[in-house]
Length: 191
Ligand SMILES: Nc1ncnc2c1ncn2[C@@H]1O[C@H](COP(=O)(O)OP(=O)(O)OP(=O)(O)O)[C@@H](O)[C@H]1O
Ligand SMILES: Nc1nc2c(ncn2[C@@H]2O[C@H](COP(=O)(O)O)[C@@H](O)[C@H]2O)c(=O)[nH]1
Image (cartoon, rainbow, N blue to C red; front, side):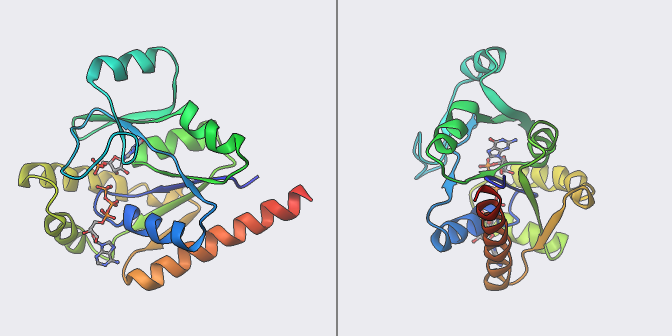
């Protein structure tokens, strides 16, 4: 059943922006709050934006098998906690994961029924522009993320669904349409 939606793609492509708009259109869709060892940005809150863990706690939880997937990304660790995902699924709600590409590849292996969407930038220059103008990361972090994104973009063909986030309205409509279609299909299968 299509109850888990994975939205992946390079940093700065607009995953978070698209997911905010997707959840406005489909309020039943829950967001799985990830864990990370990165420090909070101004305005970010523990338990709302991320579960902010220190390195030791993250490592302990990896050892304990608490993660559905986890990855090191640009020098920090990120992961989806099993209890976070299961809590939403136990409520019968569909869930969206916003994760980078290594994590999405892991989910493909362990949860092949999850619907995976790779968000593609209109161009590499536009991706750089978005990361720079967002203003949340130092220039060297932006540079590192752009370097990682080259390898991520080479994997896009491996994903069933690709959405180019060129015009935000258009890309949102495409994503909302796709998710609605899969939810309707899951509903038909269940009844
Ligand atoms: N279609 C678009 N056109 C122009 N700007 C956009 C578009 N979509 C998103 N943006 C802007 O690009 C920047 C990056 O977007 P966002 O933070 O959603 O990316 P992200 O993929 O979630 O990044 P990260 O993976 O680092 O969390 C933001 O400033 C956002 O407002
Ligand atoms: N594999 C995972 N990747 C995740 C998770 N949560 C977020 N992310 C991705 O990490 C990068 C960087 O995020 P940022 O908040 O520091 O900009 C970005 O691509 C996120 O989508 C996760 O649980 N697992």
